[in-house]
Amino acid sequence: MKITVIGTGFVGVVTAAVYASFGHTVFGLDIDPNKIAKLKKFQPPFYEPQLEELLKKTQTKGWLHFTDNYREAVADSEVIVIAVGTPSNQDGSVNLDYLHSAIDSMIPYLKEKVIVVVKSTVPPGTFADLAERIKSQTQVAFELASVPEFLREGTAVQDTLNPDRVVIGTTSQSAFTVLESLHKPLKAPIIKTNPESAQLSKYTANAYLATRITFINQIADLCEKSGADVEEVIRVIGLDKRIGSHYWYPGPGYGGSCFPKDVKELAHYSIKAGEVDNLFVKIDQLNEKRLGKLFLSYEQLVGGFKDKQVAVLGLAFKPDTDDMREAPSLQFIPKLIKAGAKVMGFDPVAMNNAQNVFQTEIEANQLSLTGSVLEACQGADVILLLVEWPEFISFDYGLVRDTHKKQWLIDTRNRLPREKVKNLGFVYRGIGA
Ligand code: UDX
Image (cartoon, rainbow, N blue to C red; front, side):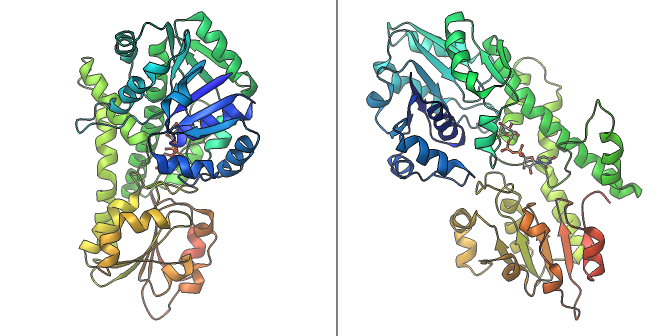
């Protein structure tokens, strides 16, 4: 079967490579020729474990192709998967410009009875408009289906190959049959829903997980005020089978390309649907305020950052990715600089992106990007761990302990061995204790 995947972001590239690994002929399409040139050389435009090998294998076998030419990608395709970005507008509503532009561009080349799959995250109600948009431009018969994506960055290949479930939201039995057989090799439960349920499921899953994070961060704040320890609280509640012990890491709030935007979009959608007083608005506000609140408490802890050397460990939004969207470093580093600190930053894979993002600060000698954890921490008054990379957790902080001065080790992810670090002589600050 010929399949086209439009958009070569995380979702698009990984989806295209996984469908191709089943032996289908897959065309990945993007309007950015630079991305296509890289992908043809097996280079993903972002850091993602296992992806390079999969791109190499599927392209070498002749199953996967990349192009910026709509005619080449779309003509004769039975299934077109749209995986372009749907960012938030200023007011939190979803911006469908990329989706509309992809649809308008593919229309001239559509094959009769094509199935158009929307993998991009879109709110319920979008399909009526999309169907109208297509019908107004072509006589070709088509079916629409919503197949939302639940992959996480950093484990995108594994998540796509081993999903917890596949959701196929469509009113067309024939489209369902084709898509069911396409996803069979994944050996995951396949759930047929109407398009609106599929679309809302995606927002529901992300908003629930974001709520869980915000919830435990609130409890962590109460622990700090009450003498309780959030890790002990998590151990206790986690044994309640209705609650469970996973995905309960308190920290600097949720970031990345999905949670912040999806919660905002759900809040906006709720208000539009008449649910003005809704949970999602509050979750978004609490998460937005989290980093500022933490920064103030750290400023107080260390007695101000003026003339302090601060090592910032972790510049992307989480480990195993170079994605800096909504990363805590984006707020912390400018705040530290404004407060008069000299900042040394390090990230195992996000250094190129950080170089671009913080170009002004680097040129002004306010920030230095270093080559290792050791280099970043050498001479530091304050070590600020923002991302839970294993190499930050296992690092021997004794190597950078200077017994002649007071040093603070701030662990925003609660992953360092607390007692060990305190015994080295650092003033330790975690979350929720
Ligand atoms: C998320 C969803 O998990 C995925 O299903 C969806 O398709 C896209 O959004 P991703 O953004 O890649 O994936 O990362 P995830 O690992 O879920 O973390 C999201 C954010 O929450 C990160 O900032 C992370 O640090 C934070 N987080 C996660 C916590 O603060 N505590 C936790 O317990 C878990």
